[in-house]
Length: 178
Length: 178
DNA sequence: CACAAGTTTCAATAATTATTGAAACTTGTG
DNA sequence: CACAAGTTTCAATAATTATTGAAACTTGTG
Image (tube, rainbow over all chains, first blue to last red; front, side, top):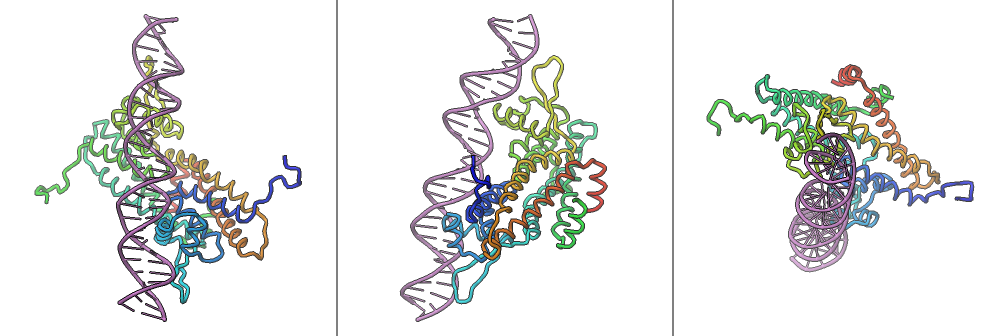
């Protein structure tokens, strides 16, 4: 189909960035951050310098309101930082670029939002007394206990990962599993 | 507020089940399975016997169509099995109750759907040649390389977890991290 | 303290995703 | 092969979630 030696015509850098932003947005949606949030993070990740709200609006073609709220959320998650410039009113933002740190931020937020809450609910439900002869009660109790065990293990693993230093992380975690 | 010795009035088993189904549904939504799917799985988990489509419809108060599609999806994910009864046309379903197996199923599905796809995209983009002097290119390339590294590590970790036998899992994984 | 430059809020609306339910289909039996 | 018992499909609709954009607000200066 393509008569040259290079079968895939090279993308321009701008196209590659756009594709990356798109891809990151799609997967972001898959792990519990909104698409716009993930895209904004992607844009900041591949930008060499800090960007203003205005820049974000333009480059992602989103409204001012959306840009404002999303950038605030990004700060909340710890995935971006403000960069203030002397003598300028306008705020600039840079991404957290250390991917281990990024992972940690996301784990922390999701653990709090979901796992911790689920554990509370499970603890309450698993404590329900009942008749050990009743198959309904037995099924309920067995399921709950198993899930609690998994939740406890996940909790501890995630807590460890969050505390992990880069060296610990790469040493224990990667070397063990790779 | 409560004058008896028991400050929280005990839930009935049915209420506890309902609450569990609700909670499981909420967290399910958080990790990429639909709420109805997660609820149906929860219901099957706490049911001592197999349930028919009819039972699922009634107990979750969802339509026949929804029940049919969701139960199919549950089979797809490997989170439930058909149980056929001799001389009956009607199909019954039981949950996969081994939580390690459940985790494995979910990891497998999500890895395929998201991580593998993302890796393909990253590999293509990270291969983009460019001018090492250009700060734009440098930022892009650094970000991509870092993410690739993380994606590679995650991939290997998840693959290991999926292959894990119960003994391996509880030995290495839990003992190491707890 | 008026104004310019920017930010935030939030009701209205658009976009997306999940659900219904009736019609079409399948399958096993007399 | 007609029928009963069940399952699946899918267009219409409902529910949910994300986005806009204009108005209100904030903040720093002359």
